[in-house]
Length: 253
Image (tube, rainbow, N blue to C red; front, side, top):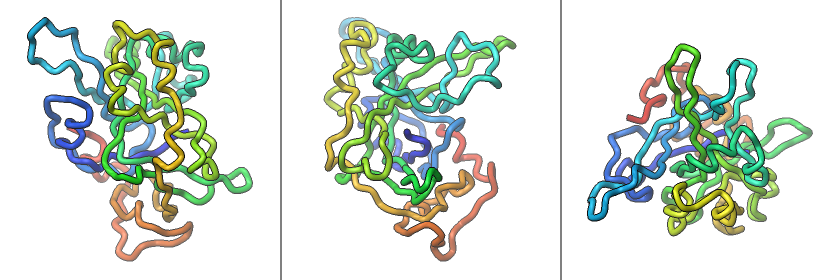
């Protein structure tokens, strides 16, 4: 699964990767967690011939997809991930898979090596070549009983590649830049047409760095959580924060 990730690239770097005209300033985010706002990009309105308008647009969505048909959100599980193997059949995801496929920019993600059925050593897993990448995402707009709407989303996962399978058996799906347009095109590309994109990254694409368990707490939001270490270690002069203390960390724009 993918339960935490980071986006530390600049707005300009992120916009350039996603093919967006521009993005407003947002802070580096080192510990993005479920229910927090997540930046996603999806196809924009169909352009008129000769138009210079960008054909992709950015959205902030709540990480944790809620299908439109849900009546009681409190009784519904938090869907932060969607298994690629059954995404076309699952009622929770099949509508979004057909109509609202998205890209989730990331600098990498965190995963925990299981130990005796418990969450063990955490790892910061990033592209060996560095830079920003894009996970496959889905978006669903949920209409609340009061009439307001909330955009929600999930990250697609797949069986882990050989390079990181010893840490966890799942990983987020990485969409290659050359395939962005096809993945986002929900007008002419049906779900079955893009299933080939839902595959593990190459075995040598990522590198895994053991880090301390500072990442376990959502309140820890600084770059120190990505420093090399093992469970129980604490880097010197770690900046600790109370939940909600850094309001900028909860908004991208």
